[in-house]
Image (tube, rainbow over all chains, first blue to last red; front, top):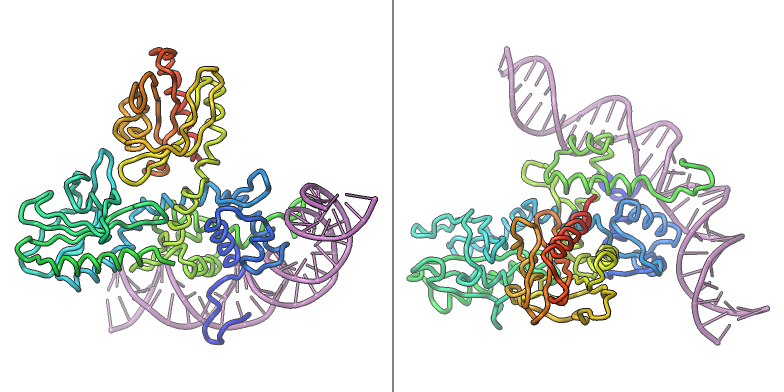
Length: 218
Length: 218
DNA sequence: AATTCTCTTGTCATCTAATGAAATAAGTGT
DNA sequence: ACACTTATTTCATTAGATGACAAGAGAATT
């Protein structure tokens, strides 16, 4: 078949190619057959067949000019996937790293109806005095660091800091999680205010930014 | 190969199967190999190979228990696709039907940064006195029908009505466009207030609801 | 612990069905 | 009408996808 002997061929070329085509169509937004074929280095006939398969499954569609564009299925599945908890799963490792670096509790929140946000996951901090679990609680978008982040209201620093927002004596630092140009959630660290300093805010902010940036990086 | 002679085989079985697996994983959210294989009627070995291909491309991933879950790529591509204008394309026909039924201008809007919405498409009405083109304009989420719809703030009726919101003497009726449990846009009709009646509001509201409901139906 | 499940992973011979070259069709511009 | 580009179909070839089977890895039951 191919590949290294011993290592069984774990993947399927046909499927690989189809997925590559799907990706390239979504990335570029609009592609002709020829362009698509060139982009993934396939013969026109093969590309055509695979694109048709993708089209039949409505992962892509053809516009009036015959160009290929993203279809309904990919959007449906993408949003399905997001809503399924995959954000939570995807953020577990980043949040764990944040806790390892800071000792403080890290939260993941998402937008909720009615100008609110919702904490959907936590990795608890290691300090003995630490913030208690807020998962499941909603919060107003305007008076919290996570809320500001969810609204894209980060200043030049890229992160938001709010002291005594939702709760007294607590400082929160938050960054938005963006996919494409859409904010789909926020990562935040919540710290008892007495323990916070200007430099630790900066440090945590940078840490959050780094993790958020990598989240959906290819 | 297969299929009807004359009709060339337009699709590729391998790719079809891979896409079917991808769909089923996203729909169910979490599936074991065996379940996935059964769901799409494949032998375990074939399903395994295809799932691995999907996994290698990060369209799916395995969780701690070994179950398959939606991966990063599918979310990325989904959001990419949405932001690319595919919503615009998908809404063209529904909007055209709305204009045919009402004679009034129909708009499509999406969320924009900073508590705003953005009109991204219009199908112009047929009345000689009609609303002028607002495409490209942003609007505040709180004082407009589209904004309320984008925030899910529809009452029991399912649609939002706002008179003299963004502009005087104009009434807008809007409904959210949901994918899964996420609101990705809003459809609205904008009418000069002097032409509106209670019953026409109700009629337009129902019309919008019907179109929005069908948008992402499988 | 030993046995019996169930589920996943690896191997391999078979032959389907994916592949690309080349021919043809359908446009597009000059 | 012609040259040129892009899409589509055809078809012979054989790469490589496939599924039966075996082997391994856990769980659960005795």
